[in-house]
Length: 322
Image (cartoon, rainbow, N blue to C red):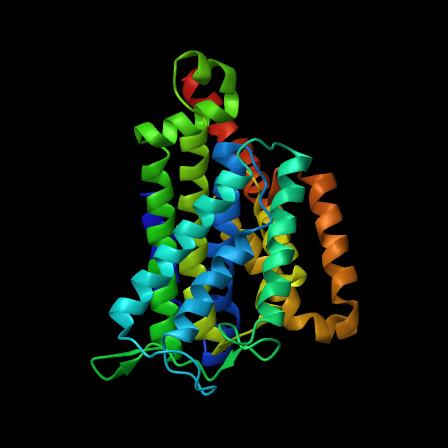
């Protein structure tokens, strides 16, 4: 019932928001939330903080740009019903490969390995002109049209992003309850016991990274349609850090918190120029992040859950006395 109560007002947003709010705030928050969800999933159920989520999203985005219509004229144009599964598949494969490389790492070592992979991919896209068109990247990337309706239309792109976000959360919820998902959580809690049972920890780790690649890839596809372009800047250190900040603000160990953090981040990013100088945005977001870490280490999602629990306590006491 609770998810339905949240979904109804989200479906009604197009009735009350203009195109600016619908596209620049709501749609962008959903897309950024999907990419942050891929990080929250790894942090929550595998206990690993990955800095390679922008890389997975970028691989899917570059695939769509390369095999779809663009103004650069590089690549081979394929139907969207082929290019989209191909982009998701490459994102899943890249996630699995990253997991294979980082399978023996935990804590700061996992962070450094995935960060190194993300930075290496950034420089590779910047210096390669055959596949990635170097510094310039791909511009004029057009979203497909289905039945005469362009998915770049503000309403269509918002509903597509909302549907993808709901599906992503449902996939996470179902995946973590599956035998493989439970094994991933067992690897997080007691890898030694998993090995003692004769189960390799490599497969669950690779599977977790591959699944996070699927989530990040979905966000990357939507992002390239939203931006109508992709370049090395889309997979650079800025986006890498932004995904982490969004996840931390919402609650790194609360998958749904990724979307809460995305809304806060996008609102600050969109209206920072009205509050302070645009160049001081990093200072502003740094202060917000510091306050979140100090006041609510579990993020805004955990803070909201604690408040709801406190409000319900008097009701529980009244029922118990009766």
